[in-house]
Image 1: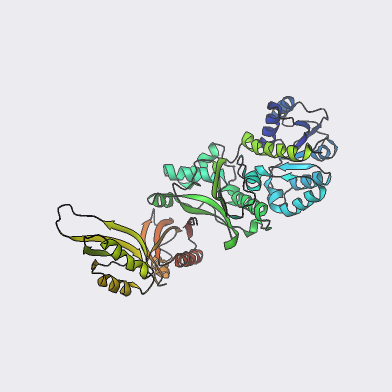
Image 2: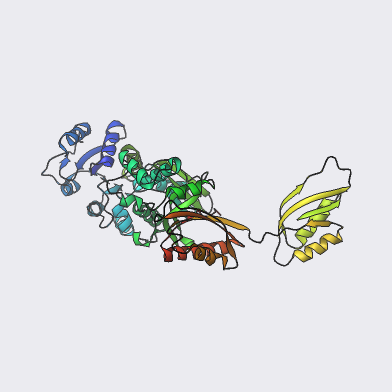
Amino acid sequence: MKIAILGLGAVGRGVAEMVAAKDLGISVTGIADSTSGIINPAGIDIPAILAKKQKQGFCGDKHISAGEVLRKAEYDTLVEVTPTNAVTGEPGLGYIRQAIRQKKHVVTSNKGPIALAYKDLRRLAAKNGVALRHEATVGGAIPIFHMLEHGLAGNEILAIFGVLNGTCNYILTRMSDEGLTYEQALLEAREMGYAEADPTYDVQGIDAAIKLVILANTIWGNGVRLEDVDRTGIDLLTPDALRLADEEDCTIRLIAEAIPKKGLLRVAPRIIEKNHPLVVEGTLNAITIETDMAKEITLIGKGAGSIETASAIIGDLLFIRDCYVKRA
Amino acid sequence: MKLEMKDSPGQLVAALKPISDVGGNIIAVIHQRDPGSTDDILSVQIVLELPKGRLDDLILLLKEQGVHIQRIGEERLMYRRTVIMIGHLMHTDLSDTVDRIDSTGFAEISELSMSMPAVNERSSSRLTIKSITKLDMEKAIGILRTVAREKDLLLIEPMEETS
């Protein structure tokens, strides 16, 4: 299978590294970052390109744009891993539409386009007879969509509960374990590289809410949007609140939940018993699915990281190869 | 309730049967024989749930069986959940916050723990709510949600109990 990769940040690099290191039968024929591109129908020399990117800050020819790679490279599947823009979804949204129109399969880790236009993109993909997969958008390495689609096929999904933001979970873990203030824990998270310089997206629950919207749209096709999520962040929590919870053998975690029957779509800090399966440590993510037949199932795993996210993308790629590309 | 009955075969079953007859649900039966006792009287504690208004019927039926009721303790509020509130709790009339639940008649604040770090800083409190039914609990938490919005307090709710 031939793939083109748009975006060469942590996720794109992870995918390229793993495709080069593992014998998966995948060759990369096009790569673009924000300022340059490279096209090679015979297969790109990944280690050389990654070394160049690290040394120069760009990967290819400054005269070749991402759009050109998208249109001119020879590939079956586009790996769209450009940065998330939650407001417009661009540039990822445009790339995805373009690729689908060219009858290419798409695998993405980009939350913006999927949260904003999932229904639309699904319809477009179906019309063009190609696959659109986005395992890496929620829960990092956790194969939540594969589980929902295949392992839990035939189940009615009644509710989802999740710890979907590793930064918040790290801060809350540290506040709970060490009695740190919110400000101290945030500072520590930054030093560890778990929090951005501007942590708003994470600590106000926006990132978790976007992931909840993606889950809800994928499972129920209900067209909910970010504005529909009742959202409270963790930035006003006090160490005393965590201590008060601790006295009852509980703790506080940022929980995303969707229960369609109750009309509930919410991200908020919640009191939760310490032995609850969603109480995970540090930057881990956890998702509980409640269904009619299987009842509750919880998956726990790494919610971020270059290689961890590549795991989800490669899972999608191999699924597409087995279900679509091989047959053709 | 705590019951006394003759220590002979079949007596305990005879004492339990009236409970199901009035539609009650037995939660626990605690029955400890005092080894030093030569009495032929058996003392049993039973924890049970009864439909409203059936307690008098049960008492009558038990008396007919020759069972002596030593003590009846009634716990009206069965459901218990804990919430945490953060903000300027004293300045926003804490007693009014508590009263908004207590005045409902179906729920009450049974415990309140509070910490106030400094005069002008936000304080944190843990409130234990008790209610008659699960639905009443949802209503009570709904009231606190409204109060929190009015008074600009952060309400941290407990996770739902899984069904």
